[in-house]
Each structure stands twice: as structure tokens, then as C-alpha cells.
Length: 287
Image 1: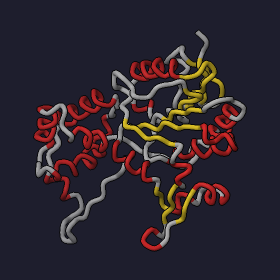
Image 2 (image 1 turned 180 degrees about the vertical axis):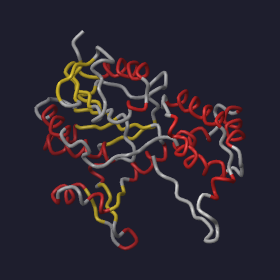
Image 3 (image 1 turned 45 degrees about the horizontal axis):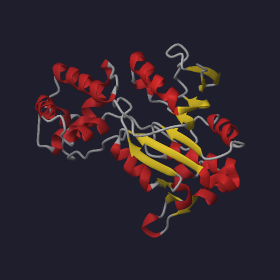
């Protein structure tokens, strides 16, 4: 999730901004319940300051001084556009190109000799680094068949998806890739875009971004997929929610399809739909 920066008057003491907004214990409890209902996110007690700093911008945008008034507005209007802003503010988007790098050689091995179209679902696309890393891996692994590869990239955070679709990143972030990948997959900015890099159109065309809430009763994505990446998102759900999502993943995978999890996630004791294949990599269990 993106942090929110703000300016303070030079003569204003640090922390003074906190005093002009009221967040009660009851308000915090309501926020925790609402984001759980909306997105399945379990907010711990120690997240109070994070919640304050991220939602404060929304209150000031609406000219409000009490979180209770803001929450009352939300609850009176279940279909209001503000729910999207509320969810975006409380969603975490920590990502990087080729994060948890051991997964990508396994993906390349999985698809290299497969016939026909290759489809991968990135279920927590964030600002795009992960789905573009998947697309680069597929392009390198498939060679002349790369045009048959498709990455479906979804996320609940619409602000993050907008940045992902743009495919523009600070050059210092892209420089962590090797030079061959930079030349093959990125355009360097100049003029007012100096210091930035943009994903080349031929790579971007292989990634299709969609807004999707994993808690929604119906998903817009359809299988079968050769692999599903759902990394570092399940940690925000309770075990019952994790189990339901895993059961819904299983029928969307090909019989030997792979599920990639985050470094701190363990699904072995949550669902029988998958069995461990390697480090945070699962294969669909036979039924």
C-alpha cells in the first residue's frame, strides 16, 4: 500500500496534525470489521497508527474531523465510490521485480516444453512488478512461442492497478535487473521522463490487468491456468478465508498446475487441494 505524505507548517509542532482528527476505540473496531467484511483483511491491534495515517487523507478530503462521521457515511452508502478509496488506503503493496527469485526458474521449467497457450494468473498484482516479471520469464522460456503466453493480473487496489497498467517505474528500481533484461524489456525515459523506465509494449501486451476481490462470490477470471501466483496476500486473511480461496483456486489450475505462495505462507495444513512441491511452491493434489 502506498504511504501518504503530508506537509506541516514550519511553525507547527510535530504530531499536531493528529489532534485535529478523532479516532476512538469504537471507530478503530468498526474499521477493522469493515475491511474484514470488504476485503478479508485482518487488521491487528497494533495497526491503529497505520490506519490513522492512511485514512486521515480521506477524512480531510471530505472536510471531516471525526472518523465516526466518515464511517457513518460509508455505512449509509454501500455502493458509494468511497468504498474503493477506503479499501485502497488499507491495502499493502510491497513488491519488486523478481521478488522471491527462486520461483521464476521453476515457472520457466514448468512451461518450457508445454504445447499450446500458456496462461498464468497473478492474483495479487499490486503495482505490476510481479506480473511483468512473470511475463519476462515466459518470454525467455518460450522463445518463438512467447506470443502464446498470457498473464492475467488482478488486485483489489484500483490505484495500484492504474500504476501497473502504466508500466512506468523509477530507473533505480529497474537497474536491479541484469542489463540484458533491461535492454530487452524496457524503454529508458528522457526529457521530463528522465530517470524513469517504461515496460516495452510487446511485453505489456501479454499482461491483462483486472480489478478483482478474492472475497467476491464470483471471479471474472477463468481457467485453466498453468500456474497461479498468490504471494504475500494470504497472510492478511484468517485461516478460514485462506481455505476457501485455496479451494477456489484448485479447479482453475491444470492437473499439474503450480501454486506459488509467499515466503512466510504455509498452506500445507490449511487445504487438501494442494501438496508441497518445493520451497513455497505447491502442486494441485490429485482427487
